[in-house]
Image (cartoon, rainbow, N blue to C red):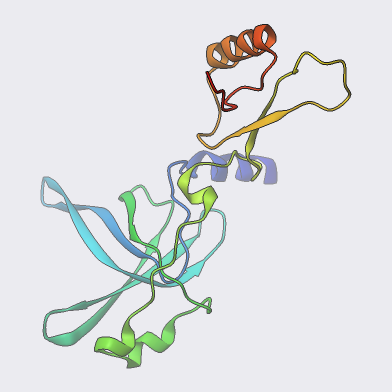
Length: 179
């Protein structure tokens, strides 16, 4: 019985969810059905809380609407009603829950922007390490020169041609050559 339940839960998980954290400014594209029409409504605000659970993961987003009225909405992350999450700005905060923003207005409610990390830019692989391509230098040695590529996984034909080129010249792939 529990295996069947786990199978159903896994089938409902979404794959295209960006990594979000409190302090980030996001635009949540939500499908709204009015009568027989369907449209997309965008809610933009700061993530003040995040709850992690498989299918029941939620994100609470707060925005300041007209007349300085704060509006909060809690979204189910894996809901089929959510079209997508779009991160517009990364915030640097030192709290997991930003409920203190409810009492603040104006400049005191601002959050500093943080620089994106390497894994957010897509320069790291799924294991959190840089893509390293080891190519023999032509010398019989136990150590090999390596070149780190920051563009993520390389296509197989690129790797094969780079290895063939390095085998001919004896230089690591991507190494600076002076001609």
